[in-house]
Length: 329
Image 1 (cartoon, rainbow, N blue to C red):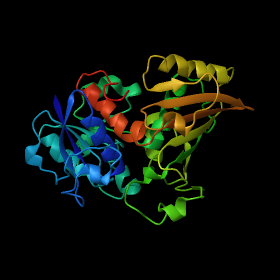
Image 2: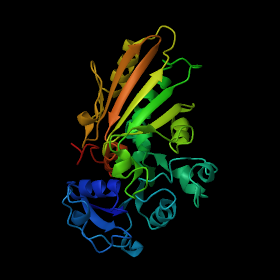
Image 3: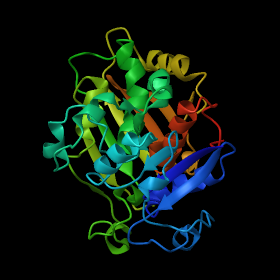
Image 4: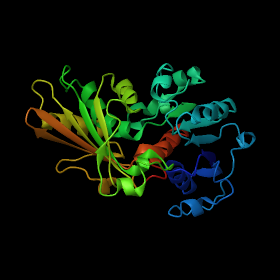
């Protein structure tokens, strides 16, 4: 059994991850930490997960050499903790945004802080298992991808790598997320009265996931996020112009060939994915359809599982040399 400390377990992603670790056949749940909620049982905060562990402040002295840690703090709060954990010999999956961008100069602009460890940014492996599996296996620090980027990168990366998209044409990602994607801290935009029977676009041209998407794709994407009046799930609708001589069938065939052996990516032959198809799972479901001169790609994930906690567990499975499906099927 390998010990996994879940740091910041009172939030939506942290509670989901603690539950996955607690049920895992080869992981033992270590410290389950929180700041404001220290002293309370996790099951009392998130009764849907039935994890009886008592939340406590993080005790770095109790982190052993070779332990695993998943840091689920909000952005800007995680970097210092990740640094301390790595220096103590832990292998860390950062579920926050603090190690996703490789260029330290981007953090003041997009996240409002100066990154304290550019060396760890250079070392961190971007934790999209279907793309970076081998590098993740040997990593000390894995940057768990953002939820929106996961839903966009999985369908687009194989198509760009294969040269199947028109190089000069814009790629447009129109993405919608459940309210849990905004985190647990309430604000005026995410409380029930604002979300119920409402739908809106936000962060146009300035969402923090935009540079992450551009970094991994190697090109800019017109990315517009929307807030759905549901709790969990992401649906991305991506508009692309195929290269000359390529049609929707060709794009679909490329994705099918690339992901045929992947346990958590399903390319649909007909129909389009829905949030209910993936709720509570680590799946990404993808469909491709023709629409005039363009092709429309739709993808769906659960933002708290494949978009956060499930992907973090998938990464830890790889880091320990386990089947990456352990604890996720």
